[in-house]
Amino acid sequence: MKKIGFIGLGVMGQPMALNLLNKYKALYVYTRTEKKAEKLLEKGATWCQTIPDLAKKCDVIITIVGLHTDVQDVYLGKNGLINSCHPNTILIDMTTSSPTLAKEIYDKALEKNIHVLDAPVSGGDIGAQNATLSIMVGGDQKVFNDCKEILDTMGKNVVYQGPSGSGQHTKMVNQIVIAGNMIGVVEAMVYAKQANLDINKVLKSITSGAAGSWQLQYNAPKIIEKDYTPGFFIKHFIKDIHLAQDEARNVALDLPGLDLVESLYASLMENGYGNLGTQALIKYYEDDEI
Amino acid sequence: MKKIGFIGLGVMGQPMALNLLNKYKALYVYTRTEKKAEKLLEKGATWCQTIPDLAKKCDVIITIVGLHTDVQDVYLGKNGLINSCHPNTILIDMTTSSPTLAKEIYDKALEKNIHVLDAPVSGGDIGAQNATLSIMVGGDQKVFNDCKEILDTMGKNVVYQGPSGSGQHTKMVNQIVIAGNMIGVVEAMVYAKQANLDINKVLKSITSGAAGSWQLQYNAPKIIEKDYTPGFFIKHFIKDIHLAQDEARNVALDLPGLDLVESLYASLMENGYGNLGTQALIKYYEDDEI
Image (cartoon, each protein chain N blue to C red):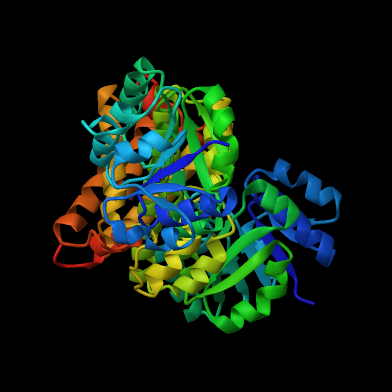
């Protein structure tokens, strides 16, 4: 049986790793902050002191780290995966990261006969816990097929999107849609408040029709309650928007809607709201300080 | 039993009037183009030569005409409803029109003891045919209660939103949400094409998650097929956006997202695309002429 490694035990990584451990009964883990591995080690996972240590022991290695610069370090650093893995290892990066970086890693790995998939997710920590994540996968179809069972252990909507980078590109598409939905929801609610409407009644009228969306259904009620706890952090969303904009600019693609949403969230970041949820976009319109 | 009149037999009005006729077995109708009444007359509706002629015969009169300037004529013109109705008549305007105009009509009607509801709809011609419209109603609660059965004959999600103008304001909220959803969907698809993704696969990954929306579900597949037939005309959508912007400007409310979408659709109008569906927004990004 393939030996599986897991790097990055944050809010997403921990429950994902736990699902793998529950199924495969063995898992090699490494993360920068060892304390975050405790729960998994109690349940039988094996701690590795360094990335090369983990790399030597594993056939399939899954990573989900914070920023695309972390991905760069973990994969391309001196003690990174590409320098440490044996040939035929399969690496699966599930961080939301740069499509261009994904292709760079894929190419460098290929020179050493190492196989890489980019497989970012959506569905949040709840999706990670319940193994209901949507997983969007780029890389070689054959490698995807070989890993499908492992990916199915973490998600329920696992789709092969195409060659290396396609998983990350698909996640960018997801975030661009959300950017538009978010500004629509928020401006509509600002208008509704100004018009003295009862927003709960408004939602009853509009949620099931052509204005309906996941964002309207789940974030509009939070906005009514002034509940800005993060389902998804502003600081993470703006990171994703920057990645998408980098890709768009590379091909001279002009996305004015995304530009606008980026600039509004940038204002919120500057005002110290990065740790709030994306629904706090309404503060751009309602907070006199911004 | 109350005698019901219906003014405006366009794409929406005809099937709505037919549902009323089927239920109440009698209906007085008037529309500018008499030919559009033929089907209803065959089924037993009664033709009225003029608005005053219809007004004299009816206790409840429903209107759904094209533009808010038509609403102005039909209600406030010399031979309009307010000058022609007997006291205690109930007027229900189901046109998507100006909230400010709705309140003006309400006030002028009140002086003559005539009652007015603003009750715009969403759900399109299919919703009109199947009596599944969402109907958003402003005006007096008591008048709404008296008309609920009549409205239920045309829709399935009939919600009292508040005082006069609230129905129209709610429809504006609906359109503002859609404006955001639309730009998100279209920019995401432009990005996806540029990244050489298989958009059907992308939709499989993202439609059921946090990016999901009615617009993504129904309009993205049309965009893939380059099918720009109108579910909702660009020329009508931009009319609604203008109405919302007029209201927002009245209270110095700045909605940059709506402004942006308005400017993109304005470009499409100028290029002669007003008769295409709203999903043709993608032409702004892909058509070199714009």
